[in-house]
Length: 338
Image 1 (cartoon, rainbow, N blue to C red):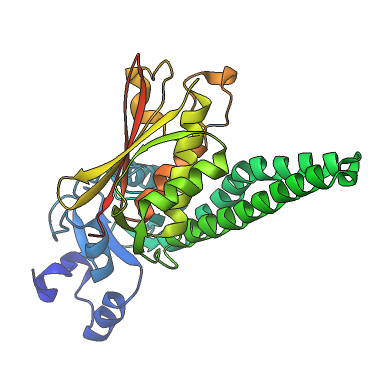
Image 2: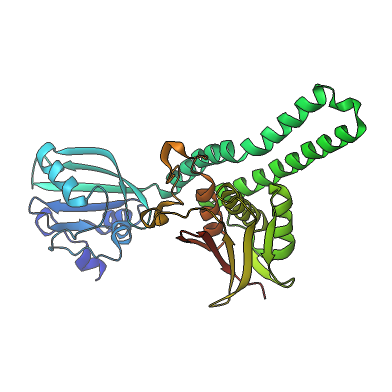
């Protein structure tokens, strides 16, 4: 498809070379249709936006899996002559703002203008998510700090042993807050497209020991000392902490963690609880924001698993779940650092 054949508007006259140069170098997409929904003109940006579908002069506008659909929008244009700042999303999570108008004089043509605002939308979404995630993740360490401070205020500082113990609680919770802040900021920047996570070789056994100490729950760990993952340390620590915390909330006894080599140069980390399991119809939704299989009777806010899944995804890993009446297993797969 050459520039001479792709961009012609036969009945409207041939655009000058200078005008075509300007239109083809616009960052926004421009598409001209006739009232039969046939393409009369498109520029280079529009061609990129609809890829892998193709725009062809003289051919109908292709069907696109956009929401709302482009054909639906054109029908509105034909009826109302104008559509202003309509936000459109695509299956690959791009966002366009569409403006359109129908010509009133001369040849009956429809002009569509598309502007890619994906980066702006992702930055806005990352900022909103950071606030929600921080409110959820800060709750536990802040509760620990507040509780320790109350004990010290109510006379605990007079007993050196009690004072030292609760001061350690405050220091541990403060360090946890700092770690959570780093992880959430890394996640927000990665999801906003500002800066990818910094991958490093992360020894898994010391990290699991650290997570166990922070959650104050016994972990039965089956992990060799040389197990290493290629991941962002802050994101991986945050994900494993959330998964262990979720398992703790659904277990009466200890929590099992098994680490082994997986297929395709992957490291596999499995965290198992001894709860009643997750219903099959809920397995694919447990990482959705605010979702809880227990509904309003849930003990949590439905955010922890979402943060874990997104943290692992940002670091090149995956999170899946398997469940039966004997409990639930969270399965993490990451690139191995061997």
